[in-house]
Image (cartoon, rainbow over all chains, first blue to last red; front, side):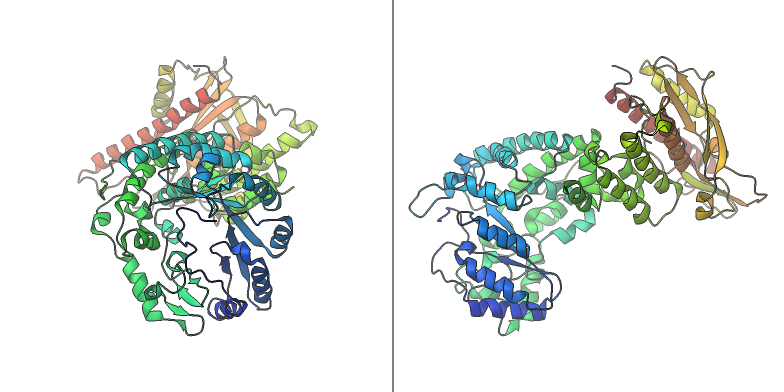
Length: 359
Length: 278
């Protein structure tokens, strides 16, 4: 595919070799042996299904415990792969931008043909094998008018996890921001309706903002710690602090923090981390600061060229989102919504939810 | 577009995690219907409540027992449960105020107490404004067994291992709607006691736990709709003024305000449950 907003466009494309993949596993096994997640990303990872399988099989020769994830555009999903995925615990997430109009705006083949109609069966297949699969949705100024309908659409398809990213690099205008506000309000009503009916689902923008108030100082652990908690390994074995920095693996070397052969450059790693933690002076004055998405350094870097400089569009969108979510939280609390309270205040909610779903 | 710092006017009006960490029993008061209909989830919740709380006080045990009782009442065909009536509703404890405190000996911040008369005035006058009137004379008496919470010489685990007979005459009753009201005062708290010949120089009060135990009994009996309020027992802060009488007065006003909050929440609940139509 050739999605309009892709952070990793197919220019100077290179695929990871089996040798580099196995060396990456060796590196991870030595450096991060305990309960480490391995995420296959691209491009489109399922173009290399065999390599994914080989890499997972290789990782199982290690004494360590790994868990696996892959994000796909869904077009190459089939029952064979999903059966394999379930057998090894590989969690599959699918990129789908919502209803037909939203999805086909940007998610097209290189020749411009839309992809929505090809996805319906794939989604059904995915949810049959992995009912808790995540849908990854990107919202742009051009598609924001479909936002609430798209969320409703995905919920009706059966998704329980909807992870949304705004395309901050898009051409956001005052009009599209007003539309974003309207759409958030609609989604808020939808969210309230579902929660009051005790329907379980996760809608990332709202969950994170609710958690940012409810968890107060403990919310820190949900936020980005650039180059500390996760790394990205490019096709050539170079290590980057986040997937957004990888690009074609070579052109962004100044942000590489090492390689699988030489190890992590601890000085560089620390330098990047500290730089990412410096705060914009305007943000320091803002009462929303502890709850804001301004901590995402790769986002800042993509949009402003600096790790710690926040883009005004992010500020605008956060100032729209936070009050709407807080009003939602207040309503649900006042209504005594048991599901809201359990979901956000009970540490064992995930376990209880899982027990409920066991047949 | 520009970056504009926000100076927010007020904190969001839904609690932080800290509230539920301090009041874990509140989680058991708000369990989704779908979970209560699932015996595996309900049993798990009860187990988590019993095992997860480091405090083995009555409130966690009560919370767990309530869940199991509800589960049993939903699933059982046992004749002994014939008193359970699905249309009977007992309000949750509306937690405003810790409901605990100590007096005597070296206690530096004793609580302030609301008398029975003061409490009745607050409760029944507030309800009367909503056109809900209660008889405060001909009220049902509840007899049940409960841990001797008021015995200061016993440790918590010792209290939980014993049951004593408790008899409480309710503070108000509305026969039309079959609603009973009880205010758990410090005097009522003293009924949760066995004679053990022990005298302590300090006395501990836990009206909230006593209220929760009473509520559990009311639910179990399933005979009348009910609400149980409790003396919030805020501590007297002698740092607020050089005049100690003023400090006590401030704490008393706070106590009354907290009780009023309990009553107001009850009014919202009673309307929502349609026990009394608007």
